[in-house]
Amino acid sequence: MARRALKKQTIIQGAIILTLAGIFIRILAVGYRIPVGRLLGGEGLGIYAVPNQVYYIFFTISSAGIPVAMARLISEKISHGYYRDAYRTFKVAFAAMFLFGLLFSLLLFFGASWLVESGLVANPASYYGLLAISPMIFFAALTSSFRGLFQGLQNMSPVAASQVGEQVMLVAGTVLFSYLLMPKGLALAAAGANFGAVPGAVAATLIMIFYYFRHRGSLMEMVDRDTSEYREKAFSLLKKILAVSIPVSFASVAMAITGFIDNKLIIDRLQMVGYSLKEATNLYGQINQMAMSFVNISIVFAFALGTSIVPSVAESFGANNKMQIQRKASEAIRLSLITTLPAAAGLMAIAPQLTDLFYAEKAAGIPLMTLAPSIAFWGIHLVLSGVLQGLGRADIPVINLLAGIAVRISITYFLVPTSLGIKAAALGTVAMFLVSSTLNYLAVKRMVGLNVNIPSAVLRPGIASLLMGLAVFQLYWWGMALLGHAYLATIAAILGGAVIYPVLATVMGAVSSDDVKGLPRIGSRAAALLTAYESRRDRLVSRLRGQ
Figure 1 (tube, one colour):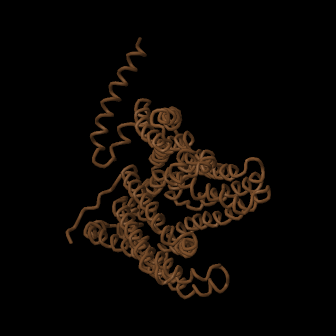
Figure 2 (cartoon, rainbow, N blue to C red):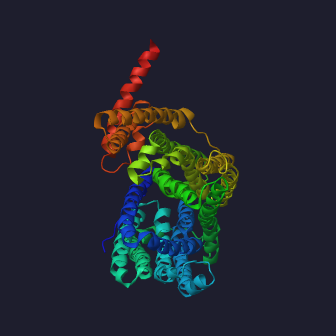
Figure 3 (cartoon, rainbow, N blue to C red):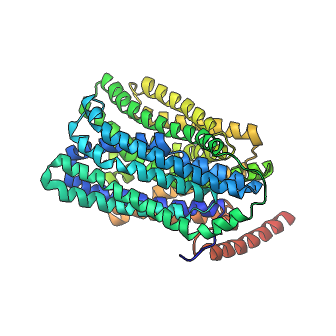
């Protein structure tokens, strides 16, 4: 295989690559649920969902935090010139993930009957799905070690390629196997849907292996440049990996457990004030499945940014360059707000119309409108969690998130039975990320200092987002008057907002030429146009001040 040089990517380039992959993956995720839902129906989807939840817990415990831990440690080693230890970190992690992945796959396979017999899995029909999905843990663990290597080398292209390949194969496998096994009964058809995820996991592993051997020559050249005598023992490297990965995994487990608590808490508290079980379940579905789907899409870039910044901060931390860390953290906050503020404004402007368009459920717009501000706080939480992980303090974001979760549960418990109803649960989510993002901000400021440019990071994108939101709201009503159809008017308003915000953000100086340089294909041309515009704008401002 021809050797390819490894190119180090900037934080923005890495975030854009992961964002494009994330958007594509979410589109596929929404698309494949339609045929699978039609094949399995409500009961079949219930059988299908349980093994996925069990798999997620097993995978999270075994290896979810590995890429973050490896990215931080590898970047730090490289910053010191310890290239041999950087590569050994990958080899140690790969060996550990091979063993952990195999162990947890076997535990799920042979423990499936116990999970059903003990009552932890309520529906015995999910037994076959537990068996079917168990191999996925092994392949997902191996993939995690490869992804951690490339994240540490600050090259996100292989990571994104493996994510896309995994999702494509998952979609094809889920639809195909559920269809083929449908004549065998609903339980086996659902198990077929669960097994459909395994080809995706295998594809992701094979793609990462392909990229590894493609770049192995460059990796070996990097190792040969190591002239230092420093060598860290394998056990010490493993301890450092686990020290970061365990808190990250714990945060994911905490969020999953919080989801279970929310389900029972919201439904029970709504029933206390007169809602029937069916009505309460419907309201929970509106916020959890419908409203949150818009929020999850809106934080794709911030999530990618938080992933990209870990190795970059770790490298600067290894070089003891606090000024560079401050700059990167402040810039990450600004970039996050550039995307999350307009998303929040747009959702607030036409929330009922959006849920009506996508889910034929206008009422879901009520919790969505309340949830929308959480997007901005969640974005800040994600990027600053990445900064703290890069600084080697993965425990701090977990503690801060737990504090936010406690506030969220308290608000849900006390306020859902009031006149706020389901909106209280949405407010709890906003409060959770407000608390966690604030605590993350204070932690980063205490550790390395943080000086966010409020006009550039908050005011300019904030004003542009507000004006865009007002325009989107008005465009919808103009669309209704001209087109006479709510769905067409909503689509027109969405497209209008997608055009209006970039223009406003550029005019107001919220977006600079440096921000768009990393865009694929159009980056250099867009940067040149923006540079020309900025030059003319600055000359005009100078003349006005001179007068």
